[in-house]
Amino acid sequence: MSIFANHPMVLPNGSNVNVCFQNGDKIVSLSLDDSCGRMELLGRGTIELHRKTRVGGVEVCTSEVFLDSTEASVVHSTMSNFERALRWMNRMSWGFDAQDDFCKGSEPASDRV
Image (cartoon, rainbow, N blue to C red; front, side):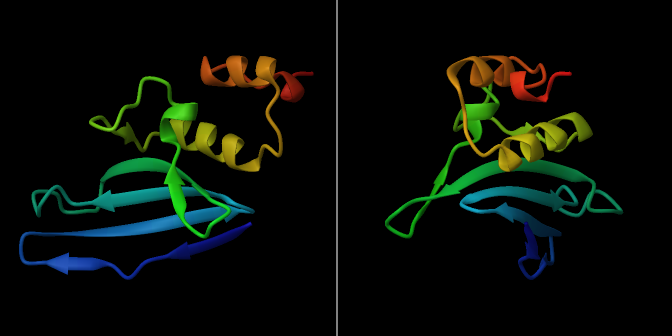
């Protein structure tokens, strides 16, 4: 797994930073901002999931894990959402049963004891 960050964007009306966690072709992107300068810290955050394609591009696949997410909505950066995103990133293969369990918010079948 690798971790990398883009250079912070500092503008007169606010700042933001993006940190990415990558494992193979899967990337978890964590973006933080200060709500257009209204917050003292970069305390407002969102999570997006990406997968590298075979032709060198990147596709957004957030809605595969967060079923209630659409193009118009965001996945807020809570600890439970971040843990869920990291479980997705570290999963090497999906079975139909595991995907159904995972997307409902429960632990994937292979992780149960």
